[in-house]
Image (cartoon, rainbow, N blue to C red):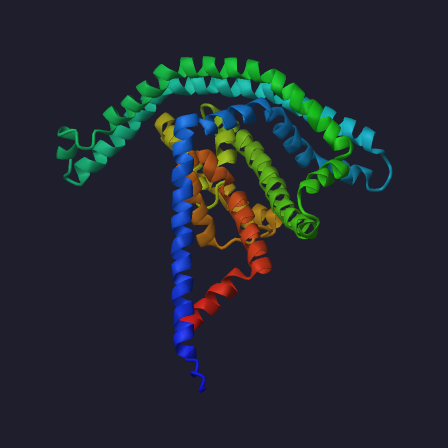
Length: 382
């Protein structure tokens, strides 16, 4: 009996069709899973329960974070055997608590007072901005825009001012109440962080018990890479932010700018945001300065530009040393995504989170050869 000859072209075509069908089924399975989770959460409120549970055990997560950030300092102090682990941990925690106390005792009340004074002064700023825009529209023969309320900046800004100032007392009271209620959580977190720092290596190794043995080495390498990304960002941006805050506070205070400490803090925090941060931080400062006096505005403009140039071209390359290794387009994409979902806080944390996502992707791609698998499928289809 003569055997039929196998048609390999037909077999390859069927295999290619089967792979496409599997991809479609995977996508459908993911969509159905998300839909099922949505229905389950709607009926049983599972996510609400999980979030409530996370709030209850939040001191553990905060304590782990504190220990995670302070452990490198403790390790460095004990590296040459000059101090034992207990003494180094006590010293670091005393300094940490002292810094937090000084911030709560002096810096935060000062910033709150300056914000209250700035709120009272904002109508003057709005009038100055509106006058400048009206003059510009008049010179451009476009003053009818303001007359028809198409571009009445004064009304817009005053509406925003009324919205924020009317809610400010309620927000401040809620913030104060929340802080008092969180004091116990903070103290418990400090205690947990202290005990974790005493034996950090053993505590961190305990987490790997839940990971299968064959994946522990690779998972440990992944967490090490992520830790390096986080520490490089925290050390670099923290040092730069402190320097920018100190220089800004001195320069703004000497120049006579209103709310100098608040604007110095604002300038330091927004400066963490790559590319757009200097504009977000600098424009309101310059606007308030020009509204106060044009000579002050010129001085503050020169100061802000000088600080940003020094930070961008001297401090940032020296301190950060390009450790994040992210393409500018990747950073901007991260800023857009995290800024959309989490606002300015999302923009601040966008760069380290993007770096972490990149590290995880490179790890998975190296382990499972994802890009090679897709390229092989594409070649087979061609």
